[in-house]
Length: 442
Image (cartoon, rainbow, N blue to C red; front, top):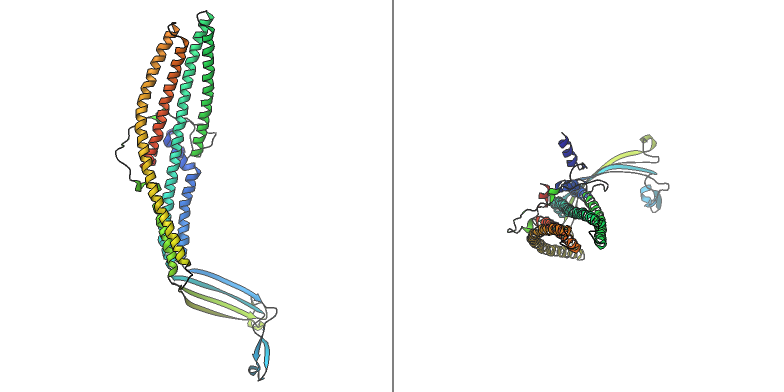
């Protein structure tokens, strides 16, 4: 039941602080909580509304209009007197009423608009673009978390090495202190081992600070509160072999797919501009009601001199572009330049992705050799230290040999840990170059 509870917490992006933080858990937490991942999901959701906006242009547009006008002074119009039984004269007569009110419903429907049709075709590509962009964002989050995770691990491993060195040097100092107290050791040996101990302690404090800073960076990339305590399991630094014989298909990489989708959208943009050469046809219809009289028409009756009447209209509007001053042609050529630029970006991206794979493969191969050598070197350095320490305690070796042997062991262990980090970072790049970063979630 407890395990189920913890699993539910992790799946909902809440970290159980008493559990070891595996790389899988760190990535899952980041994908649920990091701002970039959340914003990418919102962009996908927002793309649906953008698509609806494009589709709305193909649907009927219905509006309700109304207004009321009061004319304090009616315009006088010059009319021939013949209409009023006074031929040969001109009379000034007011036309209209003091009050006019009207309201109605109007409808507009696009029957043919090539730009709208092109926009509808581009709607699906827009959705796919944001989906691919969200996938790329997730991969970037995974890469940052994985890289920082292993860097935290290395800093902790180095701290363990220094702690072990501090503990062993403390034991050696105690032995020398006892020998000095009994007159069997020189004061310079005691002073030298004491200085060495102080230096190790300083190095240890620096590593403690480095671990804390690196952990804070990891929490930031995860979207985790900085005050949260985390603990990494030892099993995360296992080294495994990879198949380096098959080169990945660059066309399947998210970065390349995103550029291809951008190219498709730019092509639709060009077609939308070309649509300006096409005629447009739309249907309009309206039904209105108008009231006029010497008083405010609302709630007034014919007895008050106010009369209401209705009218309606239905029409077809045709727009045929003839000459736009070469503006449309200039826009089309700009769109063609944008297409050429994105194609150059695709070519460059392919080279970059191929380079990343080859570099990662080379780094993996070199790191495997270095790991093997440094592992044997650390083992040998430990044996040398054990023998030198034994000889020193028996008076067969000087303190300088003991200190040198300790330094050699620490250096060998740190070199081994660094080689592991380089391998893991190269492994992430190799997985990324294959487009398989999400396998880190398995």
